[in-house]
Image (cartoon, rainbow, N blue to C red; front, side, top):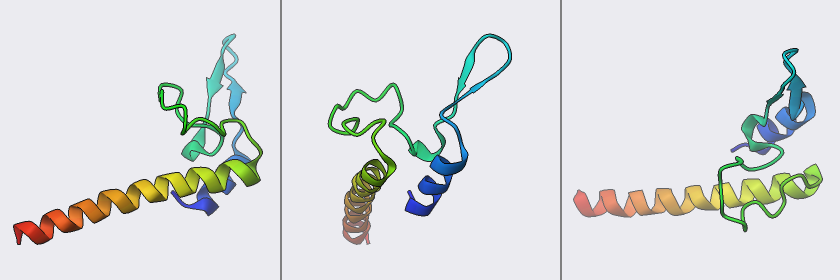
Length: 82
């Protein structure tokens, strides 16, 4: 996830909007404000609703670390298959 996309999403997209039908529509674009509601891993949700200058770097670091681990695993796997 790009920090610039997260920052722009957080700046220009509200978390909720009024649909006009007595309900609020949840708009958490690019996970810029909090993790999905159905994720149960507390370590990942520790900074939900925090200030942008704390939550965005943490969230991007966690997701980038996950990408690094996943792509490293795939790289090793494809080298073994080759």
